[in-house]
Image (cartoon, rainbow, N blue to C red):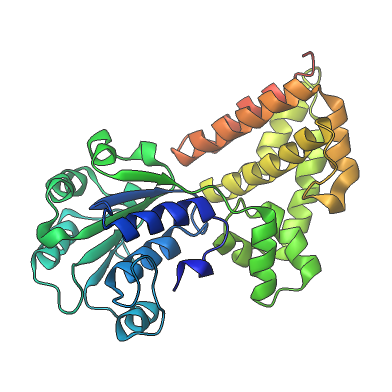
Length: 326
């Protein structure tokens, strides 16, 4: 896939194309960003460009190498992920990868591998990877994908070139959804709730999403530090497993980003179908306070991502949101 097929990451693509043109690509990269934002697609596009003989800084998309990569069957690309019945990437899997990388490439100028998600490396496999990152066998290219680089060993992070992928904008998500056959009105509802992930947007259940959005907006509008039960009732109703809590926090991020935009005088918001509710959030607190809460929601999401207790994390967040004294 040529780089032109990747939406929303123009700056990153430009950096990668410059490195390809100069022949100075790194031996190891760490791509950080939410799942479904384009990290893996960009990793494959980089490898495809490296393996393609028709262009210095991009893939032609039609040569045998490019077609094999698009088909997922190039013999010199190795994908490493947890086995279907396991949570972590094991030391045995890592050793097998190291063995494969040590062999001569079959067709390409070098071997390449993608480790996804890299935060699933256990202690033993992570430590075993360090030597490979220091001296990639046969000039192999290693790309690690992660949602949170802070979950990896500092020694691994220091040996990789870190590239941070921003979540895709609702506009990019909407465009991708419509390109995949979703009606425009449905895409406009789903995109703001996707957390910048096209993958998540495709998986969302629209009817359930509408009901959950209304429940979240209703609970948030009733939070009051003077009535503490509203805080704990909201956390009890809206918390769930880790994934559902992250979905809730993505909704709150979307709502409060829009509230901040309104507070700054920008009427272009993404949750246009619930504009009155967003206006109420914006009017209930000062502009600086809404900025503080936006950052607090980000912090809560990061904590839940690091396996903090979902209910306790929401209790603390909703207590903060309920305090309108500032």
